[in-house]
Amino acid sequence: MKTYENAQYQINPLNGQVSSISVVIDGLNSCVPIDPANTDYANLMELEREGKIVIQPADGEQQ
Amino acid sequence: MPLTYFQPSQVDSTFNGYLRNRIINGAMMIDQRSNGASLTAANGVYSLDRWFTWASQSSKYTVQQNAGGVTPPAGFINYLGVTSSSAYSVLAADYFGIVQPIEGINVADLAWGTASASTVTLSFWVRSSLTGTFGGAVQNSAQSRCYPFTYVINGANTWEYKTISIPGDTSGTWLTTNATGIRLVFGLGVGSTYSGTAGAWAGTQYISATGATSVVGTNGATWYVTGVQLEDGAVATPFERRQITTELQLCQRYFVQWTGDSSATGFALIGTGYSSSTTSMVFAAMTPTTMRSTPTLTYAGTISIIDGGSAAVTSFGSLYKASPSNFWGVINASGGGLTLGRGAVLYTQNATTSYFRADAEIS
Image (cartoon, rainbow over the protein chains, first blue to last red):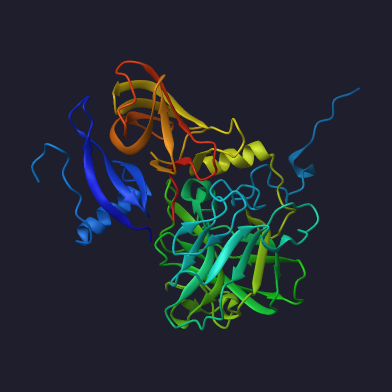
């Protein structure tokens, strides 16, 4: 299983909607799209459900 | 010269046409991530394209394209090579293996999980420093339907051709979407918890067959494989040759890497756009082929932006648009060397340690 650290939602400034999650995967800066078919997104959602990671809200958003 | 018309009865029924092999990169030609370098196995880490490692314990073996530099079987130029890093005694819940998940769309016609399930045949060339009975398994996505299999390696350090016919599973859930449909596993050492009776379907999470040889149990042991083919029908046909362009495109549905090389001009262009501040760029890039899903983007080493000035990338910002075929968004940089509004290019350094990845793999 990959390691996921420092996860934070990112807002699309064009529509104000969450568009991705910036996260460090196995030590590398990464950008995970909001797509249930994306394996990393699915892993992050599972880790969050299990309480193993906290995905920080986007800058300027309330948690 | 008169035209000749063939009747269907004249066509060899064992020939199922082009793309009959459901395995991608079965000849082990494509190695985008490692480019021939050795990879230390960890759980769920991709090695050669479409092949990933299962390892309940890290660092027990390495994987490398053409490891050991032996001559591949006739007609092949590459193989996937495993080398054991220690003499590890496999515990009951341990598992080590080489895995390829096959996308459900590509096996939907096999109708597994229905009364019409087709028999498939697995064929491959294998070579090991060990002899004896080895194992593996075919699984569904949830690992709730598993078929352990065995094959025998008779001579040490000799390429041997193996074929295994597998009756289609008439029960269980077999996905026919863009998620994992069928998962093929070659076991390299699997404990009793995940080992089952060979040659029978089971509703238990099996990764290999009971009693199979443990490659990771012998320090320095080797296990090499190539020419892997999984096809519809009870007969193994000759390995399906694909042109390198086709094979690469098939791999790039799941993974694309833009990599620099060490030559003076070995920079790889990732995308273009404009500088949106002195420390950021709005970039757009396209993937060479439409990917399985919207990919995860990752970079390593120094990735640079040049707009007349230059800056090194430090993080991803917001995505404006992302799809399986293109993406555009903000990428941040340090140093303040950019100028707002200038056209800009995003590129790797001229080093293999500098790369940008789009990953839509399954597991």
